[in-house]
Amino acid sequence: MHASTVRLNITLPTAIADSLKQFAAPRQQSRFIAEAVTQKIKVLQNEQMEKVLVEGYQATKKEGQRITEEFGACDLEGWHEY
Image (cartoon, rainbow, N blue to C red):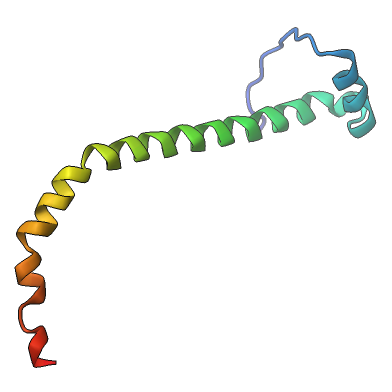
């Protein structure tokens, strides 16, 4: 089963087009470009997710510290027995 496709008219710098011709046969250039774009999108999505996670952790940092301090005494209970 083939994925649906859309035809695009893109413009590339000459140097990139020349490099593309070196690494992809004429009938395989679309696939090469699609794979490269897919890879770049995954990198950007991962960077975006990491940014969201960092922001989330920073937003809840004070709450986490408060909870740690609040239950700190409980964490130490019974340690003198060991």
